[in-house]
Length: 211
Image 1 (cartoon, rainbow, N blue to C red):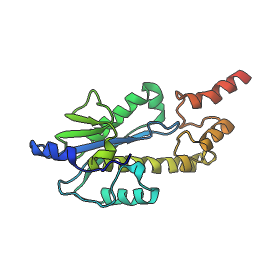
Image 2 (cartoon, rainbow, N blue to C red; image 1 turned 180 degrees about the vertical axis):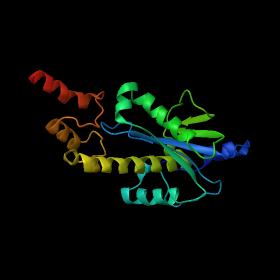
Image 3 (cartoon, rainbow, N blue to C red; image 1 turned 90 degrees about the vertical axis):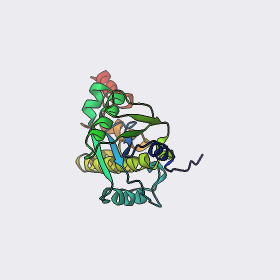
Image 4 (cartoon, helix red, strand yellow; image 1 turned 60 degrees about the horizontal axis):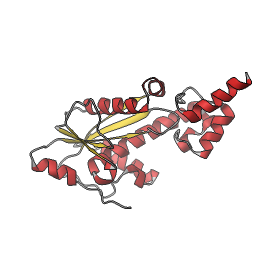
């Protein structure tokens, strides 16, 4: 079901005197390879953009254009946090996602007064927060974060594709697609695969059984 993305949460906060409102979202949580990337964004109060929406609702070319519009706007404060595949395996994906979110929010040049988070609450967290399920569909501030996180991670995965071309990371970005699983079973995991994720561990188990 389509939901109109807007500033309803932001307006409620501004009505009680909260001026600097950040949105946070992540990309890569469900992937089998590569990092998880979180972005934090503070939009100016009178910000308008005709095409901004949840990153999943945007075609790749449009998402890239919106990303450029956001990151080149001097009035927009933004930052990203990245946790790589090895740390994901060490501390688990939920903790890694929360760590990336905290890294993004604390990297903002101007600290927020309140944070809108896509999904469930994050604890511990350095600022007051409102967690919104499917927040990138309701809040344009979270939607902006979703675009920056997604495009940032996609570029990282294209860079990894140049290092490991046999896995076609530029096409599936590390997610569990048929193409990715085929390549994984053909070549086994590469250095950026998340060894703690079951579809990655299966080829390892099969190899150990043969040995």
